[in-house]
Amino acid sequence: MGLKEQIDLTKLPQHIAIIMDGNGRWAKQHGQQRVFGHRNGVTAVRESAEAAAELGIPFLTVYAFSTENWNRPKVEVNALMKLLLQTIENELTTLNKNNIRLNAIGDLGSLPKENQKKLQKVMDDTRHNSRMTLTLALSYSGRWDLVEAARALARKVAQGECRPEDVDADLLNSLLSTSEMPDPELLIRTSGEYRISNFLLWQIAYAELYFTLTLWPDFRRDDLYAAIIDYQHRERRFGKTSDQIKK
Ligand code: IPE
Ligand code: IPE
Ligand code: MG
Image 1 (cartoon, rainbow, N blue to C red):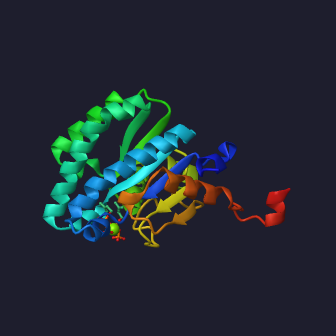
Image 2 (cartoon, rainbow, N blue to C red):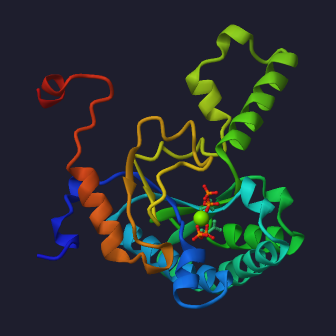
């Protein structure tokens, strides 16, 4: 039996988030420059998105560029921005063919103007696609998201739209960039790094974490299936006891 057949379709995570890591190391292993790894990472994104959509997972969010990634050498940042531009342009047909809507979260205003325009166009052109929402986290960090939400909250209070005592988890959640999605139930990180690197901090409160040694450019459908199968074998207790969950 293949991995795909081992997946219980009645227990799929509704939202999977991925920290795509290891492109640079992959390139090095192939005796190439780092950008070669980024270019090959695009295939892994396409495969993961198609596989998730085919299974019926409504939300897939991938960490493509962090707030901290701006601190990389200029040549790499420029190469990544160029690659992003080409990729969103090239993938429009595939997105539509697969009925996938493109979405983006992060400080998008800090991206090059060309990228902002192209991104907006592809988001508009795919907005009616309903099988899955693929969200790119770009110039994103969990702290950035929380700071933006805190600002919005402060503004609301200052304008008398709500009182400090009205602030609760739901209100804060509604002001995050991910307010339209459920929290990710499964967070995958590739390349054998065991950290969150400022990704969805609030949203992963109860996510199941899955780490794999596979470098991102090598990640394929079966790697996604393996992560989902692992997730399905976990007991999610949310603070309760195992006996309570089994009842
Ligand atoms: C992930 O791969 C892609 C981005 C962060 C943009 P890396 O570029 O971090 O690859 P490694 O971690 O150096 O191998
Ligand atoms: C995290 O990867 C960011 C993305 C995958 C976009 P990094 O490679 O930048 O993470 P650190 O800095 O090694 O933790
Ligand atoms: Mg890395």
